[in-house]
Length: 189
Ligand SMILES: [Zn+2]
Image (cartoon, rainbow, N blue to C red; front, side, top):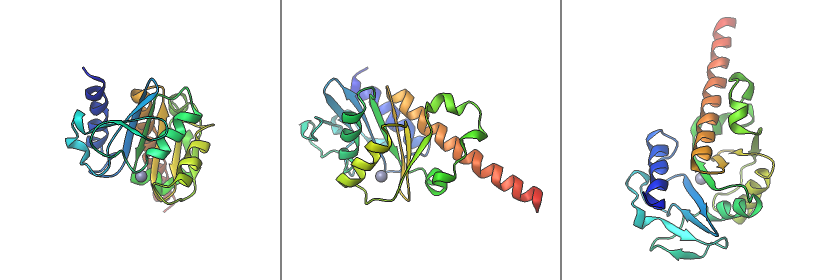
């Protein structure tokens, strides 16, 4: 299977699991000194290998006919600061975003091992800006996942499997935090 086809398996999975919407969220993986990244303004479930963009760490398009995601600055900023990172996933998961620093990592015991860090929280900064890219890359120097307030989630990993799993773990933690709060309110009720 080609690198692009393998990459698209994860993009499609993220869409069908409800982490990405048609046009929001973006995914990349590092291959040597290059980055394979989702394009801007193309419906995620129908993306084809030809529609993906190859860029360098300065954001210059090397191959492909579409522009990379408007968040390309965030992806390359992370790769520059984290040589160990091979994949970056950015989603617009609703519940983790709403809960943000209210997510309680202690509600599910196995999650710490998967995340390998705490969950960083980045204040709201306009999407697509160099300022957001810097803030996220800086937060991810000490963490493998970050909640971007009023915006979404970013997870990194050595490969796409690890980064995608971290998105799922944070989504599970947000669900568990929410259910635990609702159940304790009912008990008190
Ligand atoms: Zn976004």
